[in-house]
Each structure stands twice: as C-alpha cells, then as structure tokens.
Image (cartoon, rainbow, N blue to C red; front, side, top):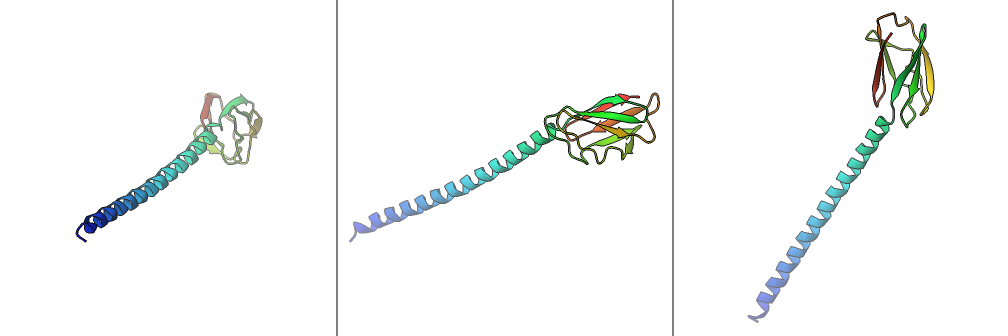
Length: 129
C-alpha cells in the first residue's frame, strides 16, 4: 500500500499539469484568433480608405470637375468641398466610380486668388483659383 500512494500523487500532478496546459493553450489560441481577426478588419478598412483618392481635375466658372484617382468607388457623402475654407454642399451627394469624374456646381464660385480644397477618405487636394 505504501508504494501506491506516490504513484497516485504523480498521476494526479500529471493530470493537473495537463489540464492547466490545455486551458492555457485554448485561452492563448482564442486571444491570438481575436487579435488576428481585428487586425485583418482594421487592415481592410485602411485599404478601402486608401483606395478612395480624389483630385481636382478642372475648375470652370462656377463649377469644378473632380477625378477619382483611387482604386475604389467614392460613395456619396465621402467627399467634402471647401472654397476659401468654407464648406460647400455642392458635392455632398456626388459618388464617383474608380477612375471616373464628376462635376459639381459652386455657389459662390471660387474667385481669383482663392483656394479650393476637396477631401476624401484617402487624401485631399488643394488648388488656387
């Protein structure tokens, strides 16, 4: 009987150790999986945002033509247009396909020496009128 007690103690210690290692493995696996999923989601969001780039293509008398120079479509509401640091609502409802252009009417137009700036999720472009 005296020889059986140490064997049972060793077996119990091994079972406790194995269960602790198993618990730690499962916990660390879930932490790593969550971190990976969040990183992938953030990376995709950043790539989508960087694909939405705009440039001021042409300024006419009372209008401006914007070009999507990115790889993703720019949705309505993604563009903000400023004339002399004043927000314009002319391009709020404009959406531009990748590589496409769109024209917005300005009221008031950009005067000589004024500045026009357009912002999109991926960049901004500014020009002197």
